Length: 222
Image: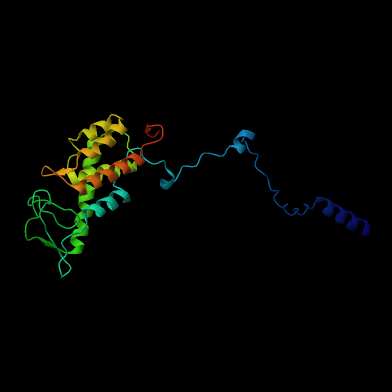
């Protein structure tokens, strides 16, 4: 009886399924890079931010120098006791074109016109932007530095002649020395030589010349 029980116990032990082993923790695997040594030494190019871009060879907006030059010569004349400004006649003709504020003229400026200082400043910004657009169109694809552009905007703001002046044609052809010399020809109003115009043309010519590269060539951007 005891032998039979022992044999049965051994048989049950041998036939019992073993308990499952605990799962092993995962082994971290480091991915194998397919990059070559040259790839790791040369990272991909970084796209520059807008303010890192190369400047345009032909600017599209008048800069601070154009505004400063225009303000210095036009002035904001005929200030009244109430702080507003009234229109005044052209110094060369004694009449038309009537001017107000920072040299503004036009059909809305006539004897008796009165503006506030804010109106004068707002009109200056609009007029400078409009004259800059005229200069942009007249120059076409001609390479132009900011200093040259600003000088031409001041010139056009005063004369309105950017579309017909020999100065413009010489600049467009790359004759910068010849264009610089052309400023001095525009020194009269109503057929009279005016010292104020002589000084203005001298300063515009100097600003224009400051934008001529040492080699005399302005390269278009890539």
